[in-house]
Length: 210
Image (cartoon, rainbow, N blue to C red; front, side, top):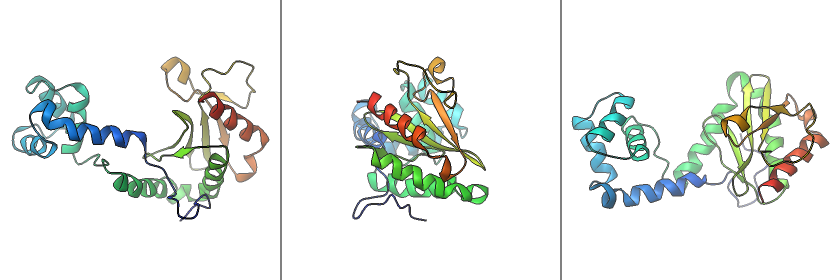
């Protein structure tokens, strides 16, 4: 299902900033570790533990890899990841959203589509779907769309630096204590819930990330 947020000749979603990080990691892996991605995966298949967690530890202890490299290689060996190209990321982004709003959550799709339109309307916003959420970026994540239950989407906001009183409708996520970007959320159950207050706080979160 295509969202009405699609603009002419523009992809529905934007490439996640992490894709460039992964591309850089793959390009530099041979120089930094002595093996390319393909060579590491072949070695893991031949000699490494099948369990992903054990594989990470094996890479760190036996081969002296850093935590990030060990984590990413173990994931790739387990058949995860593989989103180094922008084209592959965008293909999976559409798939991820379709899966998020399938089955019992399919009825939330019109609400999700309206939130995409709203997100695009407030400025230079990047929409970068992950497996379970769709983060909204300006410079960093300033909001996220999450189908939390079969009947509710939580629209989250990064309001760490907001100075002022917050309305009771904004629910504290505990993100500030955990040092997560998303500190508050509003519960939405239908398109009718996207009112002026929702728009105001989404704009406030966007402006805080200037």
